[in-house]
Image (cartoon, rainbow, N blue to C red):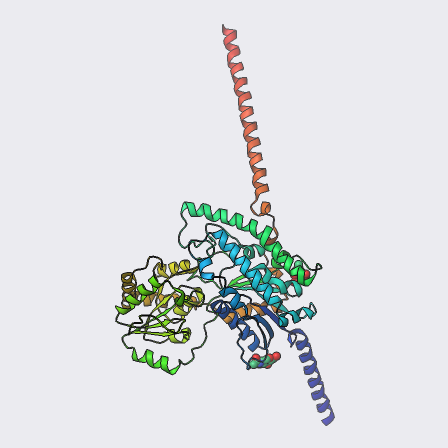
Length: 528
Ligand SMILES: *[C@@H]1O[C@H](CO)[C@@H](O)[C@H](O)[C@H]1NC(C)=O
Ligand SMILES: *[C@@H]1O[C@H](CO)[C@@H](O)[C@H](O)[C@H]1NC(C)=O
């Protein structure tokens, strides 16, 4: 009796152990993730940081190359290779100037290409990154890539694992092309390089179509081959063409949403995400908390984000802003990146850095004056703070325009800004409750999804892990030639058919008419 019970127990224990072993083989510790998030921009990295932190907390073994590491020793499953030196490379290149108004789309495209090539290659050459080249090609189970430039797919070429592209803003045309996502130049115009921010006029529609054509020529004949050369320089000639690896992308996670972006039809492996970097609030530092608590008349929060610094504003614009602040009945909290603000009014407090997410949640904040970057606007929405947009570069004016269309704020042009415009806009947004109401509505729409924020992105990455890629979600459009996709051959064939039919019809009519004439003429001859 005793022994049989004992052996039953033993057998149960053995089979449980066996099952556990099997599970470990399938899902276990072998889940290793590599992330390459190269572009040094605090706001863009904030999206990716949330993602790799959460993946590591779920027990995946995560290695990331980033200029913006957490450096948090409690994240024990996370290895961060710090390439923060690239912030200096970008700082030297005057990003705001080169992406700002007055630059042609062509010069912006070339500028982004040059800068991305330079900093990505510099990161590849970092001694701790070079160590990854000694790993065997099956070392990782999934590769996450910031999808901004083809060279960022370097480790997708090195390692044989499914690649997931992640982007903090809408992906460029080549990445839409890679998975066959529709890129209609009128319905979904490219905004980062063109700055289209409203319904397109006829001239803009022509421009957009031409952009879609020449951008691809430059990309496929110049940018992509140059990046491929660099991958071959370090990985040898015996690797697939970089363009083929990009075409093999399992999935794109793209930080776009229906509040800040035009909706578009996506193939099933392009997944929109939002609210990625929104996290639980942390308590404010004591001085800030006291300042906000005691400003019962209200506070205007002013920050131009991490790419456009307000300390770099022109003297004229700075004075316009200061003069407007002097005339409002609120306190102002200004993210000002140097020690001293000339002519700082009494109601203005400056700080080089501010915990934006935490302070936007304070009930005394009335208005957020922002450059209109997606991350800042998402924080405004999450905290229900109406905005005034002062857009400077790339997609900012389009984002601000969409906030205005939603009734969740106002937009002003920093190039023509006057003191009165700014003061009136602040008073309007702070006192008219419609703006607050509309931004609340935007928030309720954004959060009304089965999975929100980083949860959604992690779910899709684990989906790719579970299925070892997602070829079943791949649209056939991705592998079609231009002629097939646009049905050029079919349309040409049908046109020829129509032409032939018309020709035959006309020809036979002529014959019939001639015949008819000769028939009608012959009795006449008879009767004559
Ligand atoms: C680390 O990973 C293990 C499983 O591999 C998991 O159980 C644990 O919770 C993770 N810990 C942290 C702090 O991420
Ligand atoms: C594309 O992905 C599949 C499946 O993950 C893989 O077998 C193939 O080698 C990849 N091809 C290229 C060029 O990366």
